[in-house]
Image (cartoon, rainbow, N blue to C red; front, side, top):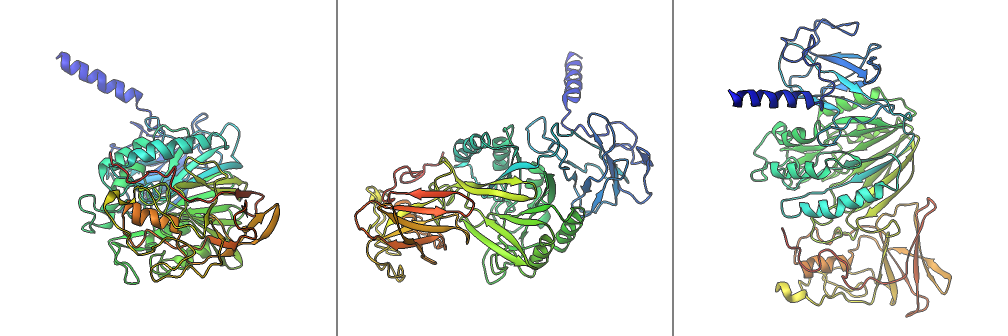
Length: 562
């Protein structure tokens, strides 16, 4: 008897303290478990065809909030003048959620501090009711805010500690210097969709000073047992949904509408003869959901679409032309400003789409994990890091790529074209030079690829976040030697040497060639120099020393898994 009394007391206490679902209608008429009889909510009559409904109200006044978008992931509606929404839920729907209005706080779970704008549809009564309460921002909508974009944490059991020990402290420290910060991951949160890693990543991003929104990636879809495609699409998203909520959703901050979507078609044959276990793009129902969502957004707003797979040219490996590539860009072109925030590639690339006379900027981010946590940089030389976007009204006023553990000024590496890369412990892993890019010197022929016949005594600069607005120049004796020339489609040999020879990976993707290398011959060989990179937004970045060794590279030789 004592045990039963104690158990009941514990359950009552848990029920009284569990206000993590403040919008739950509880035992009120029309609430879950009441047989689904809902005829009226807050003065609004419920249509006989309605199967999903509820009230969105102000947490302080109790007044219904009109004009809030609510969705089951397939169809979107807005709350009426009484703050009531109602729709016929899709048979595939498992979650109901709302798009947080700009004038209201992002509701964060009291248990873990993560955004909690959704609830599971946890019964199959004829009518499911779910209410939500929102708290108005004390200072009104945040016309100025900062968005952090983190691509590809891609953690496994052996390296999740690096995300916790390196990335997150850097994010939190940087956030203190910026107003109204929100973060969004850009997919591949996990390496292989294992439930234990989802738990660790949820814990890692819980109870932080800023709210972390999430986007799903291809690795987040994998069959957690053997990384195969022996699963349905719907099964492949269960871990993500159970951990972070819907895989397609939106929210407003300031004058910006932010949309996060899943553009991984898991289990479908990849296009272009590629071997991945997925195709890329949107299903019909996803594009329809996006159209409905954007239909409620005023055209004078900025729209930011976050997804995992790059849009780029819509070719093999990109968001496919046959899966709403052009149609999506056309939708975005209808707004005052539009940006794509993208991950997946583990290198930095900036592409501008011109659609109906409107420029849409695609930001493809270097990975938080770099080249799968095997160093502190990506395959193209971009440091492990993330993008920071300072937003003013319906415009991105400034942005930069933040290297983990470095200050904002770290935007360039300079290499001596005459230098051959080596490492004192190269042979500790028992591997001789592979020869693929040997002798790892920009000035010499390596393998079957020519560096581009560089002039002797040249400076090579890797400016990983450059775009057409940037200018890169070389200076000596206080005078400009000249603008540096693009060194197109070439490998960063400092990076290639590390992965091929020191770490010994030997993958074709390790030495990814990108178009953000530049070169120019020194006017005064052997004398001091300075590479300047102007980003076109009032910032000039400089470097005055060659990178020759691997001091400070994480990890110095081979990472030891914990």
